[in-house]
Length: 184
Length: 445
Ligand code: FES
Ligand SMILES: [Fe+2]
Image (cartoon, rainbow over all chains, first blue to last red):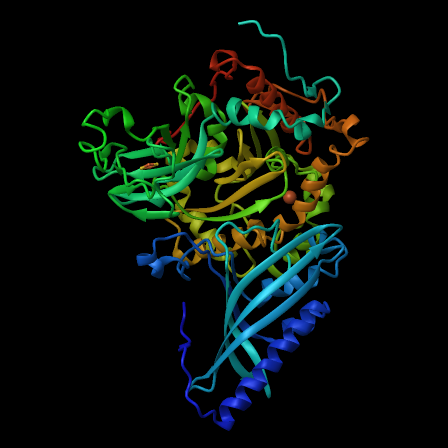
């Protein structure tokens, strides 16, 4: 799963290129969070390539020495999300139908996105990793906190960065939520 | 044995369901004993413990259970409770281990349940502890078409009798081909609902066009899903029937028809058509011509807590259910089609399910609605199709005249009453098995 190398020590010097890239994506993810929390879901959808792959594996309880099989892989046929842009588009468009009951009345969400790591790739793509806390308040008194990490592969499309692949890993075994009707 | 009827919750003359069934704090612990302590419950699938020493952590209702295949290949289900002081002996979701070592004082159990090592057996126990009587507590298990069932009740009837003629219908999905099925999962999440509500909902085809209209409509537009309108549901010749509390709905089909499960789309329909065409002869050999050609299981529940296939509503409290979603596909299916069905299953019925997510607030609120001071005094109305169900010439079970009915739900609560009032299995009726099982299919596949 983890393809981006995050070492704990960093060199003293930061190059202008590194700074620029990091700043650019800091902004990218801040924009994404605002789009979601302001319920501009079409803007959010726009941030993904047409051939995007949105994936959320399961996370199992395993022994420390077997941590390599904690997170299920893409060969597993019971991933929590394993979808293409069409399904994501259905998710967004249904919110406008007036009968998407899980989100009508809509949730109040706050996406806190942090711990950004960016790594450019030789092929021009960028790998970016972020951590999130998503707070959701629904109807009168329901509250849910979703925590996890995301790893994106981003590609340049028509002068914009777009997410060509997103892997979301929730910090949960039994997901302590009635549903996952908000976006990550 | 004559019993004074303790629980009377469903009035079969009026279809009124008493709301206290979801509210009364005394009911839930009784359910764990009377229903989950007695029934055959789905706990796993053979394919999830395929190799010797494979194990899967699962539940018999609320009791944590290790489903394990021992070194000789035999399946067992053990209560995950150390026989010393009761600690769990296994804390992983699945694994491949010969032994389970308790983390508290280090008792070691072999994966056939035997207590094989006690630290200080001589020094602390003077060699006087009876290791033989301290094996892990074992459940009765049996399998149906690869699905593993377990029960604590030594007096429960056989699994075959328990499923009864519901199997005649279940076979059309779980046992269509001799080559069998394989399972993936579980995906697990916590629903703030009483466990009975998602089960009851399985036969509620009435809600589908209304609760799921937004997703169904867009899936019709984008994926070619057949339209799901109330009108079509009302006109449907499909059937709705109940056997031993198992609630079945099925579609009447033609030989080679693609089962329109989630995941079948415009784009891959021709591949599914080809697959069903190619496997039709095998299906007819296995199920006989009639079932293989004309019966397609649709929404259904397996009493008490199986929800739409091998998916489980595990009781966690009067208003809390741990939901387990497994994906089951035919082994013979090409990988690409397995993946399409799996993706369809999860993106519609998983925790993020385009269908599932819209059920939750309805389910929570119908039960919540019986918890308020005024709401408590009011019944739920399950009167739809009253006096319009009975015996059918062709199909076994209590068959409703129309597809859209609350007959199965009434039967579910009637079965609930029966279990809750029973002293033991002697008080629980089983419908005689009268269906003729053409073809080679058996309980074992
Ligand atoms: S509780 Fe298991 S060894 Fe003591
Ligand atoms: Fe539903």
